[in-house]
Length: 194
Ligand code: PRP
Image (tube, rainbow, N blue to C red; front, side, top):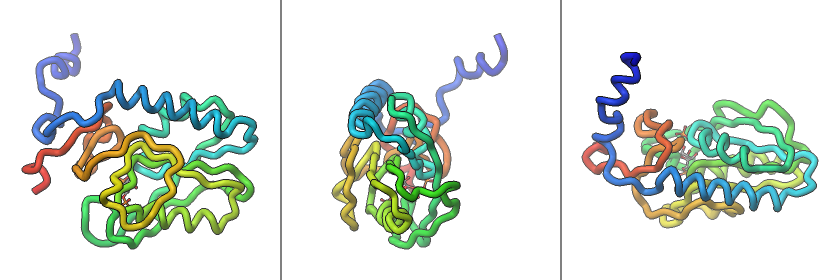
């Protein structure tokens, strides 16, 4: 047995000190992602130019799982944005593009894939930017939504789970940039938030 495997078997996972409770298990997430993939496939049946746009970095795990369940031919692209100001999430309302799409979306069916809609400021900004590029359609798919935190109305077309206002991490969502690889979504311990 390699030392790496031995270490994995004897040491607790590194997220344990930060984990208050599991909010959504891996099985719950995978079941919902499968359902979303089926609904999205039905919605876009016949589309010749579907483009999934993943908002980095949080949306990465969701995108890669979701696209396995989308039966309509499609391509993928990525955008990275950042917010000015304080806060662990992009809640300041001031957003700018760090990395733009590599291709034109003119005339295409664009589906934005996000991990979470919180204040709504990030998606509001992205929607405005992308609408100006004249896609054929522009829809939103988010795994999580915190409606109680909303500052801007966001028309979510495909939703995984509505959640309460708790700081969550895992399955793409980070805690100080770490633990995005957790296959489930957990609530962060209060003490760990400082
Ligand atoms: C998170 C999340 C959304 C945004 C939602 O991104 O991925 O993009 O915040 O917040 P909002 O609705 O209040 O705008 P974050 O800025 O943490 O970047 P990351 O995805 O790279 O972790």
